[in-house]
Each structure stands twice: as structure tokens, then as C-alpha cells.
Image (tube, rainbow, N blue to C red; front, side):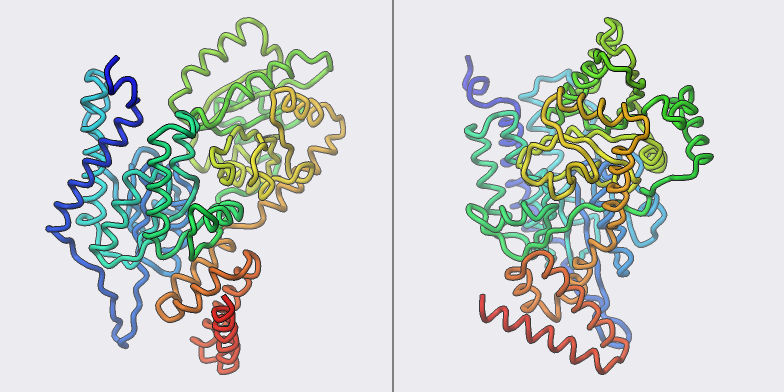
Amino acid sequence: MSFSRRFLPEETLDANAQVFSFVLLLLAVYFLRPVRYKPAITTEGSQDDISVQVVVLGDIGRSPRMQYHAISISRLPGRVDLVGYNESAVHPDVASNSRITTVPLPIPPLILRSRKLPFVVVGPLKALWQALTLLYTLAYTTKPAKWMLVQNPPSIPTLLLAIFVCYLRGTQLIVDWHNYGWSILASTRGPKHLFVKISKLYETLLGRWGPTLSLTVTDAMKTQLRNKPYGYKNMLAVHDRPSSLFQPLTDEKARLSFLQRIPETAEAAADILDGKTRLLISSTSWTPDEDFSLLLDGLCSYSASSKTLPPILAIITGKGPQKQMYLDRINTLASTGRLRNVKISTAWLSMEDYATLLACADLGVCLHMSSSGVDLPMKVVDMFGAGLPVVGYGSYASWSELVTDGVNGRSFETPKDLALALETLFSENDGRQLAKLRSGAMKEGSRRWDDEWQPVETILRLWDTMEIELRSLLNTLPPEELKKELHQISLSRNKKDNGDVASSQVGANSTTRSRNIQRQS
């Protein structure tokens, strides 16, 4: 057995190739330095420039949180370059926004996406292409910006390239932590794998040294990153919240019209509306971190129940590498009679149709298994926005930050748990429990992205004039108190800008408090 086959699996070869290729690129770009950022000066002589590069090394259309960031920044108002792969349709508010410029990353040539060449040849070339195109786009294609907001993961090569470009262009870096790259790798290679350890060290050190500000998707993640071995500072938890696109739909005529329009529900539209057929929705990326077997086995158990239960129409949306494997399994289960009163369909919908489908469904299913234990699935947020209660895999620490068992959803760990939840909720004649969960989902979904993003707006607007005070607040106050204080600072500054003399004293009191906290820390 060769050394590469025994000690360097494909993921390791690919990652090593990325490391070596973009280190060489960094040296080349250093001597061909791009244009640096300079603050724009208005006619009155004041700075008036909030410009941000929003970067996702993935499909922009399948990165809703980064799109929401871009939309919010544009409303400051700000100028946004949204950088990523242009593989699917973007959010309507992104497509129609003149302040947001979508900057597509070039996809690798066909030869690098085919399987005609061995991986040992394609892997390094594909890594070099990815690093080169990302670096060139960030450094030369886009205009210099005041801020760069980068999604993590993936961390390789994104974090190092982002830090390097920010250094060259005089840009301040914000890292938006969705999860950890090393923990995702560990879920397939094991936590003791050499490259997992290297990846964790890489992510830990760059996350500590590079960003001016770090955002996290949960309070649990923020707490974890603040402690050893990370030791990060200047952190703000920004929970995922639904955009205005996701809304409850209570008008029965509108629901019936939509269900009759899309082919997946057309035949069963009337029965769904009457409650004779239950509509179950799950969105999946068809990857190993979402065990689709849990849902299939749970539906088989539901089908085998001795109780008289309503039929289920389960619609699965999304794209991913394991889709065909599971479609083959679904066909086998159906042909052998194990899905007796269950029909499973797959769909790929526009964002608008997906939002409406959620609003028409009876129950959502989430199969997300957190590799880190501290992230949360965006799909549940969207379901709550549409007023749809959720049953989801809940065996990780941060799940309870979003789903409260018996209030807006149910948790499960095994297929048996899932089947029991479905039987309980769908067998009730009066639908009391499901109605209670729907009410809780609507309440949770009423908390919107714009409200959650307000502290970020305050930081972006006031960083230049209140950096010391803001750093102090970020590193000392607990989450809820921090958000209240940032909100008060924002209100005070707005009143002051409008000429309200009394509010100046409020702002001064807030600043004094920040300085007192700093002295204590």
C-alpha cells in the first residue's frame, strides 16, 4: 500500500493541496498589491461609507443567512459585493437590489469536475483553481471595502485568504461562524485524525488573530469560542431569524390554489386542506450530517402501526450528493409495501414557492445533526417563520435555544421516537396538540431577522467613533443585556443626529457606563 493511500485520504490530499497552492499565491499577490480601501468623503467633509464584501465559498442561492446579511447592509444604506458561486436563484430582495452586486466565482473547468482523471491529479488542480479564483476576486475584481464579512465554514482556504486580502486592502474582517470546519471533517474522519487536528489548530489560531468582530449563530457557540482553546474576543450572537418572505398563510382559498398549482401536491390538495392527508415537509442537503434514514425508518414505523392513521404526503426539498442513494431506497421500500399509507416526493422549488409550501404544511421535519453541538439549522427558522411546527433531531446542546419541546415542536433521537410523535400529533380528531405547536411556532417566528440584526447595524455605524466602548461591551455584557445596551446606544445616536439635545445626555451616560465596564474588566 502506498504512503498516500494509507496515510493521506482524499480529504487530506485535497486540503494539503489547498494549503500549498494558496501559500504560493499569497506570496505572489503580496508583490502585486491591490487597491487599498480609503473612506469616502461627502461634500460636507464627513465620512459616509459603509461598504462590505460578503463572502461565501459556496452557492449564494443556498446561503440564506449571508443573503440576509447583504440585504440588511444595503438598507443602512451600504454598498455590498456578494461573492460566491452562482448556481441557483438568489433571494428576490438580492436580485432586485441596486446596492447589492453579485460577484460570481468562476466554476472549475469541466475536466476538473469530471471523474475521468484520478483524484491525485484533479484534487490539487481543483484546489489551486479555487484558491486562485477566490483570491483574484477578493483582491482585484471587487472594489476595496471597509468591511469583509466571511462565512465559516469552509475555513480552508477562506479564512487565510480573507485575512491576507484584508491586510493588503486595509479592510476590517468579520467572521460569521455557522459551525466549525474541523468538526465537520471529524464527523467523517474521526476526531483523532491528523488533519482534523491540524484543521482545528488552523481554525483556532486564525479565528483568534484575524477578525475585528466575530458573529455566531447561537449563544452556546459564542460561549464555547470565548473559552479555551479558542479565546476569541469581540463576539456577538446573531441568531438566525426568518426573512419577511416566510409568513403564515391562513386564507384557505390561497392555500388550496397553491396546493393545486404545484405538481407534488395537486392530486391531494383538497384532502390536505380537509386534514384527511397530512402534509409533511423536510428540507435536506442530502449529506452525511443529516441522517435521512431516521425519517425513512420513522415513516416505515408509522406505516406499520396498528392504529388507524391518516395517510402522509412527505415532500423532501433540496439537492445533495446522497440524493440518488436515498431515492433508490425509497423506491425499494415503496415496492415492498413498507410505506403503505405514506407517499414520498422530492422537489426543488423557488424560494417563494418553498416559503408558501411551508405555510401550507401540517408539520416540518429537521434531520440536522450538529457536528459541533453548538450550531442550529436555518431550515427550522424558516419553518417557524411560516408558522409551521417542527419535529427534529434534538440531541445536541444548542437545540433548546430554538425549539421548546411541547411549545413549538417536538424532539426525537430515534426512528421510534419520530414515529410516536407523528402518531400522536396526526391521530387526534380535534388536532389540539398540533394547533398548540403551530401557535408556538407562529410566536417564535414573529421574531424577525431585522430585529436580530439591529446590534450589528449599530456596530457597523459606530465602530469608528466608539470602538473602545463597543469592544468593552462585547467582551463583558451577557447576551440580552448587550443587545439592550446596543439598542439604547443606537437610539441615543439617532436622536443626537436629529438634533435632540436631551438625547445627547443619554448617549453620554451610555458611553460613561461602557467606560466603567471597561475599567472593571
